[in-house]
Every structure is written in C-alpha cells, then in structure tokens.
Image 1 (tube, one colour):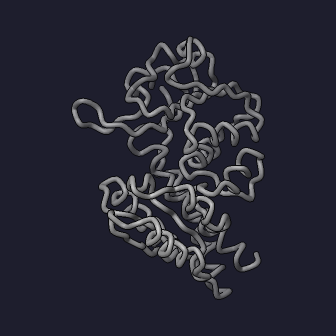
Image 2: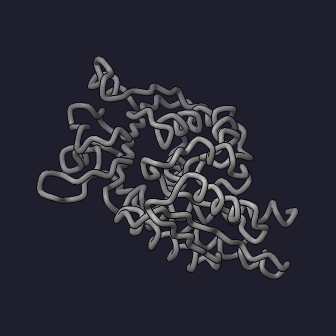
Length: 284
C-alpha cells in the first residue's frame, strides 16, 4: 500500500510558516503584495486566479489583479505592465501565459524586474535556477515538487531520478533543482527511445510530459516514488495526470494524485516567493 502524497497537507504546513512571516513584515510596516496580470478571460487563468487570491488572503498577502483586454496591442500592454513593474508597493508579479497571439512575450521577459518575477520569466531567474543559485525564483510548479518531496522526507540525494518532460515550466528547472540536491538525473520525453526501461530504473519518477496516463504500471519499478505533475482531461472529460494512477499506485511507495497533488501546492509556493520578495525589499 503506497503513501498518498496529498498537496493539501504540504500547503497547510507551508501556510503556518508564511502567516508568521507576513505578520512579522506587517509589524515592520511592509505589506506583501502580489499583482496578477491577466489578458482576457481564459477559464484556466480564471480558475488559477481564484486559487491564488484565496491562498494570498489566507496568508495575509495583498493580491491585486490587473485585467487587460484580449485585443490589447503590444505597446499598450507594455505600458500597463511597466506601471506594475515600477510600483514600489508591488513585491511580486505573476503574468498569466501564454499571451494572445498578437503579443510578444520576449520584451516582457527582459522587462520584468527579476526580484518581482515570481514564476521564473526573467532570463536572470532562469540563469540562477540553472546555476544552482537559490536567490532566484524557480517556476512555482517545479518548486512545488521539491516542497512535496521535502514534506514527505524523501531525500533525492544519491537517488536515480527520472524526469519525464523537458519544458521550461517543470522538466528542465526541476532537473536542475534535483541536481543541486545531489540526485542523479535522467531527463526523458515523449520521443525517448527505451522510455519504459529508463523509467523502470528510477527510484524517483516525475511525470511532467502533459500526456494523459502515459506512465503505466510496467514503466514503474517496485517501491518507486512517483510524482505526477500532469494535468489532463481524458476522453470522458475527467481530470487526470500523466500517470495511470490506479495501475501504478500498488507498485509505488509514495505517489501523488491528480487532482489534489502537486497542483495544490503551486499557489503556496507563489505566496512563499512573494514573502521572500517582500523580505528582501524591506532589507531582511
């Protein structure tokens, strides 16, 4: 019987620490503030926004939303973004991506102040993550996996870890974070030859390829730790991960579900980043 790694348990443990830090900042006159920048009204953006606002409220962080029209021009967008970027009362910025097709993300990545970049858009933060410099802000989802492993006392040091997925949101930065913690990393993807054999040899297996139930029972070794980062909708319209949970769960020592797994921790990591940014801005 495997241990179910529940995101809510991790998030609740983080919440208590964050509340204390926010209270300490407020006593010194600093109110941590996050601004979410959203273009248009995509349902997935709105769903994440609701969760983020709730998490900020629970920890005492001020959360603002800058909603911009979907047809906004590049120059108009940059003008509005610059106002938030230069506002000293704003400690952190979360920009929902992808942006509409008429907008180019690259100038925004260069524009955002690295110390306000809460989800690793800035090339400065990307470089810091890859250099093992922990003063940077890693992508929230990648860091959520690390928070989950830490909460369940799963030390990647010396372990064979396979990460299936090579995105800049999860796969690549997470691999660097695990490497920083002395894991032996193999990065795979949907075109990897002998994927089954490679995954089966992993002591810790992270599924982050964005393909519903692609990790089957014969791809998982007995007693492996399985972290599922995928969020997909199956043919029946149900939310599911990259792991065939029902088939894999009996073989795993630890496994995270979808939903209620890694995704439940991302807004807590976002709050943690905002608090760190506010502490730095206040000179702590």
